[in-house]
Length: 191
Image 1 (cartoon, rainbow, N blue to C red):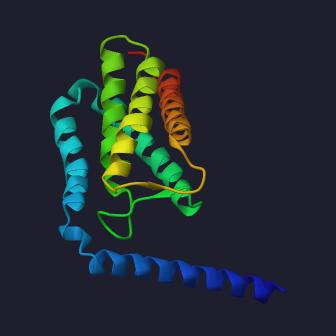
Image 2: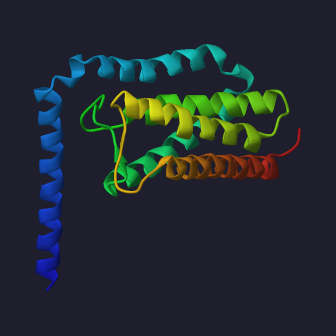
């Protein structure tokens, strides 16, 4: 019985490898790396990082960076879940092994980082402004990505589901950041 289970698992791993190889072949066959849409993704990866370099508050760089890293990691897990569950995917990957790289690693994290920074610097409510940003991503940016052929939703998945995902990410990242801030404050000895 144990060998049957392991054999089944090994077959699933082989299917995953074949799927990845098929994606690489698709990427090469349709020369996705030469398409207009591909270069939009390159801009989505590089553009926000350049903006962040100039706009990040250097006095709060570790706090903003930690928050952005939290957004990036949590969003990547949510996105991975959605792709593996067949809810959505990215027809034109920047790198075949990492569909969604430009959006997961740059556009979304940088946008939320700048919102977080703005709320800190202007003493505004993070939850209100990040929720507004999530609405913009779910109901404006994602539909544009769908129209450009850069994002696909499957089954009953809709923009409200995407909004729920964004809200989960922004709440989880804020919670994790707050836990670390609380821990730092609690265990830092006063001067």
